[in-house]
Image 1 (cartoon, rainbow, N blue to C red):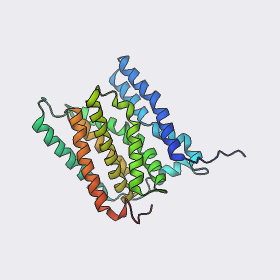
Image 2 (tube, rainbow, N blue to C red):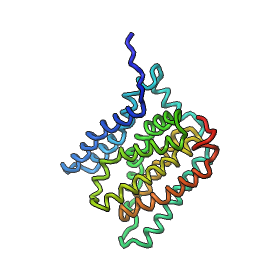
Image 3 (cartoon, rainbow, N blue to C red):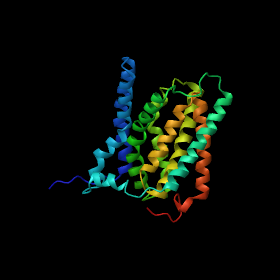
Image 4 (spheres, helix red, strand yellow):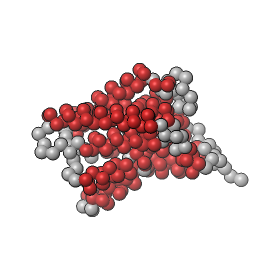
Length: 267
């Protein structure tokens, strides 16, 4: 009976394959815009591209965990009973950040509307597009697998920094669709990476407190949804998010609740 050999570097293989799958799908998204296809077509293709990490994990699963069931693995990521206190705390932190940024933008912006959506229908549509094009497609691979796999070798904090960096780099093609060039593009990339890596640390701390993938999905969703709601300068928005999430990440590192980032924490 032929059995595939177990991957020696599963996380590295996952990251590589995720990028290989993402690039052609991302170009397909660009093609929908160039061809002038309806917005919903572009949104659907973008959602599919966002699931590249899940596609990669599915393709590699049998070589990462020989003999295990993929369905059972996924179920296991949602088995732990959700803790209301964890969800509430994470949500309140992100709501506070959103309100602070909204306050700053409101006092410095000259645009007619501070929000990017103009009706409840668009708000609901944007919420679900944000959910499908990010959290639901990315968290199983990046958090459910890669983060937890690295935590077998490193502390959760070190694993977060490593995965946060590569998760940020995975977004590289998107950076060049912002229309920014020169120093503006460099500033955007710098703030983007700070925001992503800081958010990753926050995700890890709260995920390890509850061990349910719903937690990072919620945090990821609020990050994307809130930043997309505010109508402001792109560099300013990402800069404010980078600053606030970095402050939260540093505070969590210092507090290290229940040793979730380093110390005696065990999965």
